[in-house]
Each structure stands twice: as C-alpha cells, then as structure tokens.
Amino acid sequence: MDTKAKILQAALKLFNEQGVDVITVRHIAKEVGISHGNLCYHFPNTDIIISHLYDQLVDQLSVRIGAVYATTDQEMEILIASAKASMAILHDYRFLMLDFAGIMRRIPELREKHRALVVKRKVVFRQILIQLRASGRMRAELYPGHDDDLLDQLFIVGDFWLSSATIFQDGPIEEKLSHYQRIFLALLIPLLTEKGMAEWRSIEPMP
Image 1 (cartoon, rainbow, N blue to C red):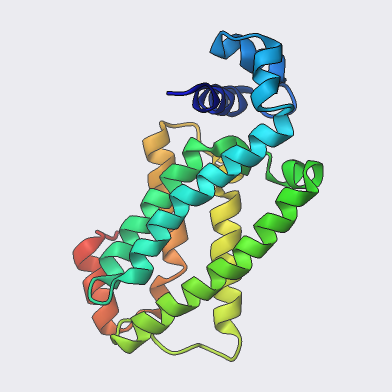
Image 2 (image 1 turned 90 degrees about the vertical axis):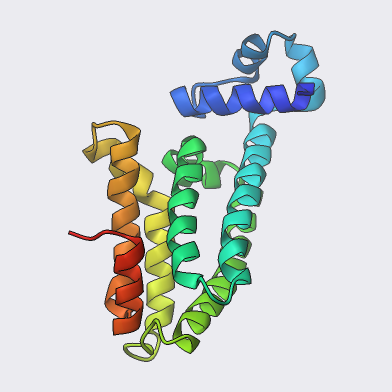
C-alpha cells in the first residue's frame, strides 16, 4: 500500500470514529506514522482528503449500481443484493453520511459534484424501473410523477439512514444494516406485480 492509500485508510478510520470536525491532518499523520509535512505533501488539508474518500465511495457504489443496470434476466435478485451491499459500503464510509450536510456546506465543490451525481444516478435508476416493468415485475407509475417521488424517497433514505440508525439503533451493526436494508427495499414492494412479488419472496424472506 502506497503512502496516499495509507493516509486515506487512516483518515477514514479516524473520521468514522470521531468525525470530520475533530480530526486534523496532524491526527492523521500520527495515525499513519509520518510527519505532518509528509502528509501535507500528498494532501494539503482534510477537505482534500474528504473529497478523495467521497470519490472512493462513489466508485465502489458505481460497481454495485452498474451490476443492476447491466443485467436483463436477474434484475430483482441483483437489485436486492446491490441495495444491501450499497448500504454496507455506506456504513464503511459512515462519516460522510453522518456529517453529510456539514461537509457539503464546508466543501461547496463537493456539494455540486454530489448534486450532479444524483442527476446521473436517477437516469440509471429510471432505466432499472423500465427494465422491471418490461419484464412484468413492476407496475406502471401510480400517478404522473410518482417515479420522481419514488427516486427522491430512495435517495433520501439512502443518504440519511445512518443518522437514524445512530440515534435509534443500539444493537450490532449487522442488526442495524438488516433493519434499514428492509426499510429501504420496502419502498419498492407496493409497486411490484404478482410476478414481481413472488420472485421477491423467493429471494428475500418477509414477515
């Protein structure tokens, strides 16, 4: 692992444990075991480190979302697996989600990048809805504009479930993930056809 990768790994650990408002480049340099000057040669400040970690998160999520978009015969199974995996990845970068609003205010360039990313992501998710409907797994829009509302719901839950989990869930991370994965996926269940519901039950046990 090169120095940059070690710095990002250490920063992720410290940010997750203590938050971005507490950790400085000196804390990260100490964690890595290098001088403050050496760290600043690679990353002059924590905002740049945060931006790099954000890009890492996006890259990992893109792999999961791309898997759903690319398939034509196992959309439901891959959709469920990808949603669960994506939420686990978000937990790995939980400082970004827990300090989300503050980070976006603190780094305006990152806010603009995230807004542009969401626009692109919605295009992909719309295509997934089209695929599910074409295969008879999902119903048509419940009302004009419902897809827009649904996508907003999915992104709101996806971006902010960790804040809820931090406040309301005290159990092991596995229990938190299971609880909020179920909540996220529950947004899609009312839209499934009988075919889609039967397939869903065969993949995901329900109460």
